[in-house]
Image: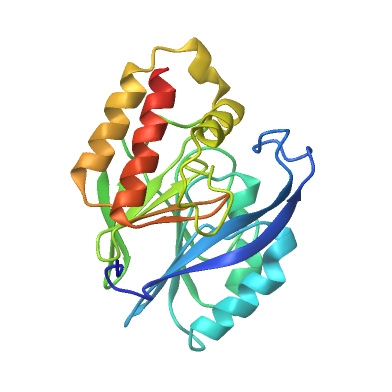
Length: 244
């Protein structure tokens, strides 16, 4: 199945070793895991969803230089203001004219010259944002979170950027759904699910995925999930595990 607006979204970042020391990964999982940020392009500029970890700053800036012409206006949207999302802001601003940094709550954003624009989103009431002409985004505030988190949705590519959720895919082509991987990732990242009423979380997830067609899930950790059928299967597995 061909994705809508093929090539509009690019994945940037690098990989880390899973050796039991990565807090957001299940302790028994070994191998490597990609850490991602994403670039959305239009004729007027580009939007970067998160900035990656400091260890990947050089390859991320190099990839941006390969994808964008010099002096391309670049807006940044942070899904979280945690260190794996925001610490490369100074390096990126040194390479490109950053128009603004859009974020919500949590840890203070690193010092930059660009305008810092805080986004306030209520649960179940997404807001629309167009940080660069031609790149309209719908911003969700999911209930499946620890600290304040945003899930931007790009309606043209039908991509939902899910930050630290839906991070369970362990291969580039995760065609065989592994419910155990879904369960392990949820429990290590969102351990509070074992002590909470799951109903509000389930209702919120169903609302998010009913609002717009989602062709791709783009998490900050792990591999993206592509194709409407694949997305639907992984969402259903996630709902079942949360309910359980």
